[in-house]
Image (cartoon, rainbow over all chains, first blue to last red; front, side):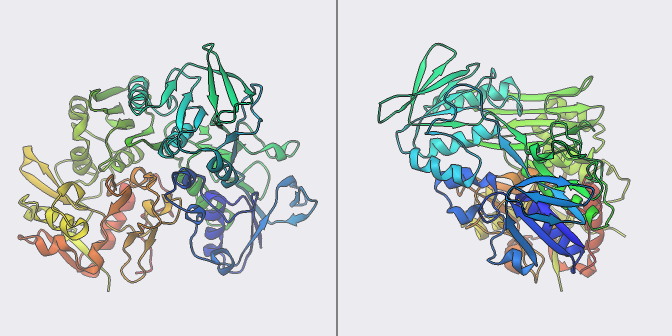
Length: 436
Length: 167
């Protein structure tokens, strides 16, 4: 059996490892598009911080990890796939046959259309190669313009701030992290950034970038508010899109990402997809969506590989969730944080202390949450939402006092007090003796 | 033989000696906010519930970590955070559906129960026997894990937290 995994990010690496544990004898080839050891893009901000060296971004730390598992690791970009003959053709012309193929080609940053987006000193922050360029320019005191204050932009913001850059953030949406949190939370983040000396321009567009003779700030960023921001470095964080262009003309159906069924199989026999390049089911909506986050990539990689190996494993759907540290102010959101139609909400807001907790319910189940300034036991929110525990009387208590969510979780999910566990199983579980 | 923390909340008086001992053992200070074990207080039911990590067989935190900073100790099954590798991204803290891995702002890393390298300070400190450290065969721990996997459903049958046959 020949397994080929196209992509060496978290989805690809997890899949290759899962294939190996499921099938000791198979030939496994993993193909990465960058000349690097497999690494995590999520760790790049911490490399920019200076907290870690490049090897600290690697997905696996043991030297020889892939060869020890008998995983052949190649480099290259796919040109096309012939699904009839089950052959992958690389851009250099090499061909690689497969019995089962996983497409885990990830996503790439969207380059905005304004003039000057490709000038020297303008970089995305997506690859290790990008990070090396940014490190050369993002010096203490250097004027830096960050285009985009979505989730990725806000993580990059934190790193650039830590490097002591003189930061201006330009966001087209009316608030920061508009796709992760609501106006109240976004407003808190903005206020927090401004209090730290970061200039935040929301509802503002970059119209152009031009080159000047100013050695300290050779780029002028023209803004829709009529002003100009000088910059030594411009970082683009305007969103990402799935890497699927090499599939044009193939019989592998693509919407925003590659279409997959509940086994993560594409429309071509023997071909599966995982991670940022595909649209799999969002647990909250039951509909396909591209959830470009690390835990989802790992989940997909694992499930796709099991199905490729003949271990039939349906995917129930992934929960969207994010956690963000903005110069020490930590926020997170889960599931349907926008709320459900006909649902109910419990929230507590403390603007002065940058604290916010908002819980969303549908019937007596929690379906979404967002919080600012709260980290302790925050995973319980995932537990409650993903599991769909019936909250019973706890729902009204949580609408009144959302901060009691830990009590509610222990009570309902662990079944240690009167609430019965949703599964109907009797008795407590975590670290508690099972009563006879 | 694998050992686990066994918690009998019926015996807990809420004295919080476990939290103090955990924080002192792991952080060198008496600061219950940094304890890996927490006692939850249900006022209305006059009930106290100590709560910490169960060392899932296949752990959500471990799978979510982008840089392989959480590994399994082969001998004890304990999930250990390697501080030198943890970048502080906090993804494990939202991924763990039990909420038992938490961010420590003073180090910029995450913390979780590691059973104090086989000698848990909380169990030593507990004056009422609400927290004990026992061989898992005698505690029905596999049953607990199997309920843990139900509690965390939404993962696939082969997903994290599912009991495995290897013990």
